[in-house]
Length: 612
Image 1 (cartoon, rainbow, N blue to C red):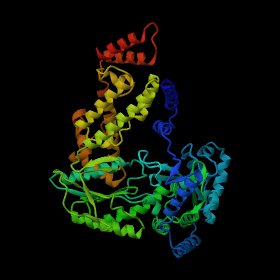
Image 2 (image 1 turned 90 degrees about the vertical axis):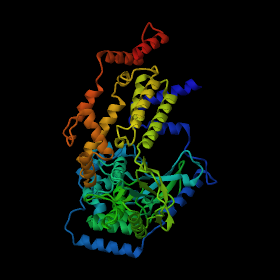
Image 3 (image 1 turned 180 degrees about the horizontal axis):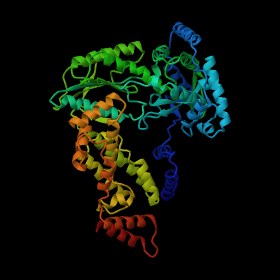
Image 4 (image 1 turned 135 degrees about the vertical axis):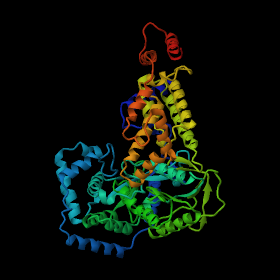
């Protein structure tokens, strides 16, 4: 039975290794544990569970609502602006449709009409002409067809380790119209300059990431701690922020951003007439109307929400409160609905929280004081004995926190994050060995390189820290285990036996690219911080620039011009001919069966090549 299961996983591994659109760990989860329970909150039967979720989502998406008189006033003002405008925004060209369809992700289902994104990507160009006419008509008349307004919500667990019978452990994922996604992409392409968020928002932007946001937070703290100072931060937790967006507030923000009235009128119709239903194991609930929230599953929703939350980030900046480094403000950082506020004083932090409360009340958002935490960055690691309040409730002070998936400690010790990512790596390796240990060498190599080596957030690690060497040691041990190499195999042979570079090389190159991208970033905040790091060599980025200076001979201030990739490559290839020859023979033994030799004899040869 076990052999049969191993063979099944081996066949799956071979299929996944040749198809990048399939995800290894997700497929393993589906095989190991069903994510759809037969009983939710005591309710059984697919239709009854579907209706249960529909009631839950209906309450969420009608919890804020909007004033109908305000909506009619807004509509009238849009009509007036359209009548007085000579712009030809109503016309959507075939070329715009072509570009939008090219950006669609493959294998995305709409949940209603049975259409996939593949149907549009592989359709003849004649269809694009018809879509051009359709979208032009939508803009011209301000009316959205019913098929574009409906969506189906499927529920997935938030945490597989928690009870799958608890309604609160599920979140909705929307399957919405592919046509609407194409329409969103056209609007986004036309008005990306007006929908772009401020320099303090790191979500849904090219060359921005959670790691970059965390890095700016840590480097700000490092600046204040440099001469014995402190920095106080608060990590705000917004409850169901995307789902509580007020339509009127959102559309008025778009007016202020000079989005054409004809586009806003179209969005008003789409938002105020949309409806959803819930689905569970094929059973579907009745449709229900939506009166608040950004449209689930819509491509444009991310940009619209960032414009919505940007109002808070800009209010905090204009208040004059919060951290500054020179002329650069760094008091508020956002990644979608995750907002971090930084202040050099406790009084300033409290006043910034008051501003956040006022914003939340005006824009119908809710900050959860139970999940919101405060952290004092200081060299002594002491927690202040002072009460900071949000919504009248005292917030918790912590010594470490997970910020956008990266651990941050109050002393800026990076070992906590390194150790967690190492544990995650070892767990991935164990899963691979357990399920695919009998797979061919080439398949295991591809799976290992593709699914085990993300090391999320490693660009912000300080490369000279001992914990980074521990990660490299874990990688060495993993390679030996996966390919059944002797435990004392020379480390020089390991990357060559993978026909790849060492982890040290990959980490160094990844960090070098990250620093270079920061130095030339168009975001003023990011550009300032990385160029500051290059000058004073402080913070994690500054420490890594110093490390490259000493390791590869990079001149101070010249990391952009220096061919660091070549220097790292030369360093990583510093192997003698004998090592390369041994490595090639190891790969040959792992890849092919050798006629005339028993498996024990092959293992003896392998042991000799790897250890002598």
